[in-house]
View 1 (spheres, rainbow, N blue to C red):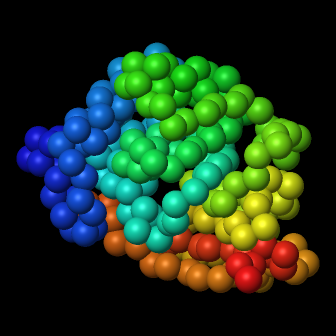
View 2: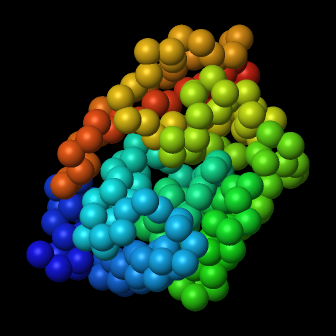
Length: 211
């Protein structure tokens, strides 16, 4: 199965409809990731077909559970899931933050080469990063425990915002959250062609609950 077919099959399995232009852009992103990875070691995965499942489909699998608005991707690494979600949802706004300048340099190149207009990028440690903007959703992919994730980004969430943590198996330690915070949902995910546990944990804090 070629990369186009692999991506289309995965989207069908996830119940996600992407037009051919979006799919083409995602595969161009994958091509750049594969190319830069040879020099910058951005991901441990070297095979492009495996990248489709482990990176593109893994990121797209969370999309049906997200909501429109301003999103922050914390510890975005090589742009996952932020770049994938930004390409798939051009009407949403994404800010990507990572402290690794090598990885943010790659992401900046992706933004330029693919003409992605709904992404802002910062190279910074998120716990000390300041912005006047507040986000409707803050997402991370294997960034840290949910409690630490919330603690480090609580100054950036909007009044009605939520935290979304992409995990393997849902952690036993989810109960150790900051005071006034709770787990709203734990959603098991099935990612096509990915033979590993995946789950989505959505958290909220008092004062951030929709009224």
